[in-house]
Structure formats: C-alpha cells, structure tokens
Image 1 (tube, rainbow, N blue to C red):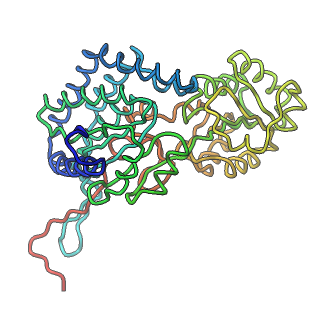
Image 2 (cartoon, one colour):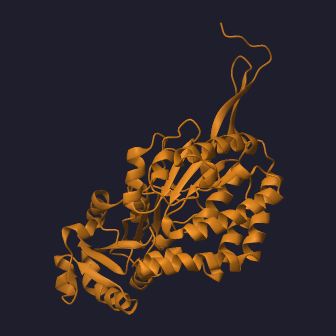
Image 3 (tube, rainbow, N blue to C red):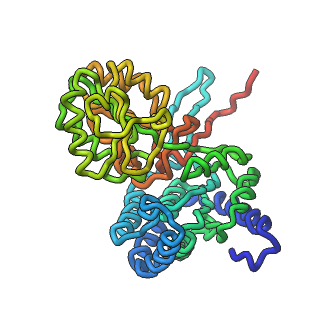
Length: 424
C-alpha cells in the first residue's frame, strides 16, 4: 500500500492491520500443498531476481557506510550471492517441513465418553519489527506462511530499499500461488512513528516479535498493547572446565567469538577454571590474537596475561557484537554458574568438559534458551537446530524459548467430540 492513497500514516497502518486480519482467516484454512507452492515460487523468484535485489541492497550499503554504521552492522545488512542462495534454500527447507497446522495431540477419552484433544492452529497476525538484516524479511514471510499466519513486516530505515525489493518479490510469489496478497505486508515508510502506531493495533494483531538492538526491543516492550516475544541481548558465555580438552576448548572459543562476532549468539565472556588457567589462557590468547580478538581480563587473568587490558565491571554485562572478549578465571563450576546467573541474558551458554556429571548438571541448572556441551555458542540458530529458517530467538518463556520455527508460530486449542453428552 502507498501512503499516497491514505490520508495519514495511522490510516495506512490500520488498513494494513485490517487487511492482515482478513488474510489470516483465509491462511488458517489453506492446504499445506498451496503454502508449499507459494514458498517454492518465492524461492525461485529470489534467485531469478537476484540482480534486482542486490542493486537495491547496494543503495542501503552505500547509505550505511556514508552514515558511519559499524562494520558489524554493514555485515548484517549485506546481501551476498551466498545470501541469495541461503534465503531461497531456507524457503525450500521450510516448505519441506511437516506442517503443524491441524495436527492433534494429547488425545484422551473422558469417563463420560467425551473425546478430547488439542489441535495446533496458527497464531493469526504477527508483527515483526527488525533492524538491519534484510534476510529477516524472507525468513519471517516464509515461516509465517507455512504456519498459516499473516505477517506485517517493519524493517529498519537502513534496509528500506532491500526490504521493499524483497517484499515485491514475495508479493509476486504469493500471487502466483493464489494466496491472499495481504498475508505478507511491509510497512512502506521508515518513519519510526509507524512502529508506535502498529503497537496499538491489538484488535488485529496477535503477537509482536522485535529483532534488533536492546534499545529497539525495550521501546517496543514499553509501548506495545500486544504480547511481545523478545530477547534484549545475547551475553553468551563459555565455561572451560578443569577436565576440558584444551585444544577443543580453544577451537570452540575462537569459533564462538570470531566466526561472526556481530550476531547475538557470539561468545562475549569466557570463564576458565582456575586449575587450568595458567596452561589454557596463553593458548587461548595466541589463537584469539591471530583471529583479531582483543581480550579484557579479570585480575587473575591479568596475572597470567599481563599484556591484555583490565576488564571493567560493565564488561561482564556487555554484548560487544565485536572482536572483543571478556575473560574471567573462576574457582570452579559453581562459581561459573553463579557468574552466568548474575550476568547472562538467557540466550546461549556453553560448557567445555570431559566430566559427564558436570555436563549434566550444567545443562540442568543453567537457565538459557540453549545450553550446549562441547560445541560453539554459534549453534543457537534455527537452521543449525533443524528448524529451517527462524523468526528469531526468544529469551522470554511464554510461549516460546529459543529459536522460533514454524511450530513456535502456532498454538493449540482444545477440541472435543461427543455423542449427546450434557453436563449435570
């Protein structure tokens, strides 16, 4: 919808929300085959129109660099050839997943003969508010379509050209499959006031999912009249236990920090058992330095690595999204878990250990959307965990915790079958 056909921004947003509600009612009854046809059509068009999409993306990148956005933010914004293939492949993967809509679970028969079950149904209309990453436009559209929802997308001003180009491609694919065009809509203006208006449409929108910096998410939570699934930030830890394979610990830590530092599942704090610190920390320092990582350490770390900077109190709560890593020597696993409880963000926590009992206890007691043993924090991702594309990672616990795939974009209702029962 163009603002030129509306009298105000608010009228535009309300119309978008109303159209999405109508589309959601249609989408709830669409067959799996038709939804899959739409996903395949969009995937094909993304590849076919790659040059068009990347030309629009180039405008956003040029503007971002001119405005001094960080390299990490520019990286999130960029659509490479590999990114084109990843978006298309992600849609095809989602098309191949089992459709949860309409499935029955927890069936039982009551003493009076009433048959009870839970039926999985779409959530309805979902609003996605996000920054930088234009691939979210495609991921969100694909997941919401497969789960039978309608979605309203509001990307950041830094990606407006990319998002509008992708939205046009998605609309064409939806039309080709005969689905309602309003099932996927994008807010066509970068005006931040559009977000505030969108958050008031509780009559039409069932859920808001914000993706971006902590400031954006807190703004959404403060203003929304609609339930919000969120995570504020990713302060992810890796604890190197006294029984860890040190070579494994170095490899995992470097991958978790340096493979892609500007994302929410990147490692931000490394916790090291005191009994292995003198052996492990020089190995970690050498590997991290080669990867371009700057270390900041506690007093005990500085005693072993005097060449690094001292960590300030705020470093333990920092989401750097950069090649910076805080390092702390801890007494034992108890101390490590206490530090995580005090400074973690319920996102991703890892332990590197050869002690089975310690791994089991860490998994059981540490509270995060993914707790992982002997592997990189970078695996907290919908694709890596088998969900296909993801809507985001929730660190709130109602109604999803962790990466949100198609199942997390549905809910259940009770259904019952009787043969004339009445309640006395």
